[in-house]
Image 1 (cartoon, one colour):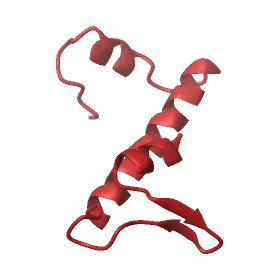
Image 2: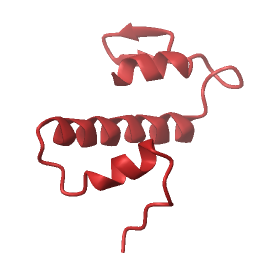
Image 3: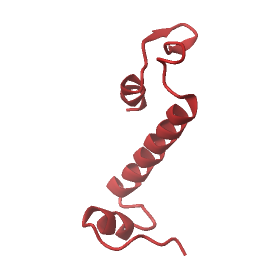
Length: 74
């Protein structure tokens, strides 16, 4: 899940106030953490829809997984 990704990006410990990261310059770059966390959440939602056969565009994943042409959202 998202916590495992945050650990890979420098997560150190969990406290009553949330997640703790080392201070800069050794800590992760906050915008990168936010971007990766958002990507993981979106991917998880997309996969849930695929597993439930409710995804509106499952062909996008087929194209991506098979290395097809670039997906266009037009």
